[in-house]
Amino acid sequence: MRIAVPTEHQGHETRVAVTPETVKRFRGLGAEVVVQSGAGATAGVTDAEYQAAGASLAASATDAVAGADVVLAVRRPDAAALAGAKPGVALICIADPYGAEEAIGALAKAGVAAFAMEFMPRITRAQVMDVLSSQANLAGYRAVIDGAAEYGRALPMMMTAAGTVPAAKIFIMGVGVAGLQAIATARRMGAVVTATDVRPATKEQVESLGAKFLAVEDDEFKQAQTAGGYAKEMSQEYQAKQAALTASHIAKQDIVITTALIPGRPAPKLISAEMVASMRPGSVIVDLAVERGGNCALSKPGETVITDNGVKIVGHLNMPGRLAATASALYAKNLFAFVETLVDKEKKTLAINWDDELVRATLLTRDGAVVHPNFQPK
Image 1 (cartoon, rainbow, N blue to C red):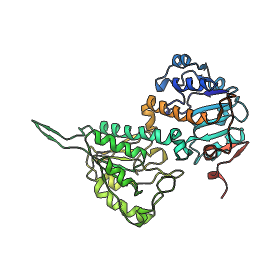
Image 2: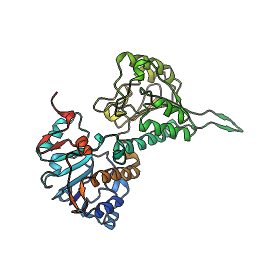
Image 3: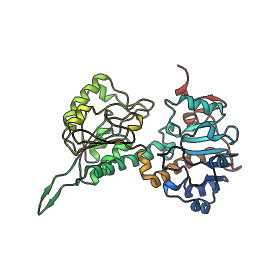
Image 4: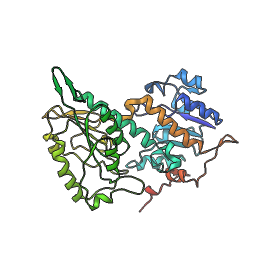
């Protein structure tokens, strides 16, 4: 069994799909691991460390995937990049398939069995494989760090002989994994924190972290969570009521962090241009949904916008990648945990059980066709 790890092809992607630790664990499963030279450089992993863990190095992506049974990646590679792998090669990555139907179709035509790790079901057995949670946790932490750096003032209240420094006010919009970590981080740094979410279950979580919850708690709010734990898309009427509630609140905040994403849909607009205009000069917005269009109307992917009234809007692409070493370590463990379920440990070969619930939930393409139910004709 040959596992290949090519260098990430997107320029802003700093993470890598294996670490020396998981290379050793793959070797324990009987796998040969081939890593493209330089694949771990942006995550702080040298070629020498991979070799010491038992991996072989390949000079190019083509050499790395040649004869591979499994290709591990962070971002979905193009079908052409997998030429030379074995027929039916298993590609395991964050596939980001929505809006990329042509690219997914090309993977199918190439005979690739592509698995989307972001579709991993939220069940107990799969917790260790949940890439969305492992990466969002770091994104929430980094959002507070970046927001504090851009804010340029102290976050905690300080009582000094020269006077009292007031605590910064931080507002978290969206209380998923990223939002909860942002709350915890901001609280640890001494800020006064408020948070909002459309899911009623999050109120208790927010308050347990020492923050104040803000939401329109009507009948629609009480039913605003899917069985999988995700937020539902709210009606226009609810969004209008929530916007009215948050508009006056945002005007008083020093840092606002938005984390709201709905799988398969553009990011909901939570902060209008008028809300931004109401904020004080020097205030900061960190938009974690910028890759999906952004929660703020004025966000720009990959840029920090400074508005006419002096508000900074931070739109970093790939926030987990700003902590590349830690993000890679967690992501690599997520991948190993999944691949381990696909291996016959006695024969030390790839033996995918196509009826396994984890396989059915994550499999995008197989045998020349796009097979995931979310991408079938309605």
